[in-house]
Image (cartoon, rainbow, N blue to C red):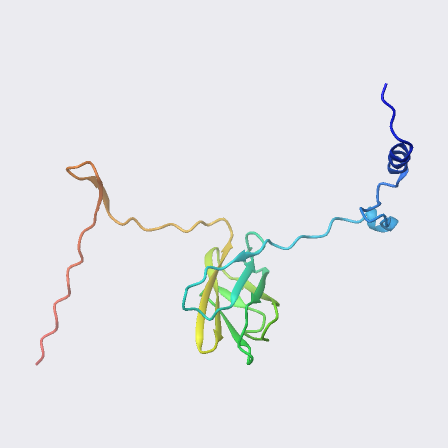
Length: 186
């Protein structure tokens, strides 16, 4: 039989007697907080792709699930990397089918992470975009955030007929558009 040291046994006994609501730092959670509903979690943030010649501002966004027609959706935005002492500016716009209910412009101070919320409402099912334009030092970044409303999935139009070439490669054969004849000058 293996015996534990007194301090280890004492620590184990204390842990067993500790209330379930205690946290790691030893400070117990208030009784009301133990039985409260879990907090709603914001959508995880996605970092937008950047181009080498953009404005230099990192944009992160979070869209909470699938939107519903006529119900506002809050999109979380975070901006970081503003280096110009004059700051940067943000302008928001939406595609057809979305209405922006929050401010359409925002000033970003230099050297700080800025968080904002853009609220949009969709008037139809399908995919539409919240467009973000960031200007800093005369350079422009453009990011389009997809907002899916309802279950309608975008469908691409058929590009032509799939055929196999002589070497077995796949070829999409599409008819060419006939050019319109220019109008004669009279």
